[in-house]
Image (cartoon, rainbow, N blue to C red; front, side):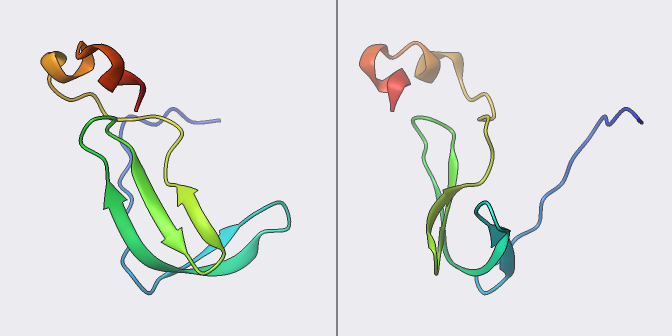
Length: 71
């Protein structure tokens, strides 16, 4: 197993990805970025999907914004 130090993901509306337990194809219809949580969501022909299971860190003020940090 090799150690990764960087990852780049390039997706566009119209690209096909594999989703679900059986890895069925789905086409990306919309890409959304949520400022408060830092999450990226993909809307597909098989429903919405989270792009990553982690969020990129933003400003510290946003992370300490009380209830907003849970959205």
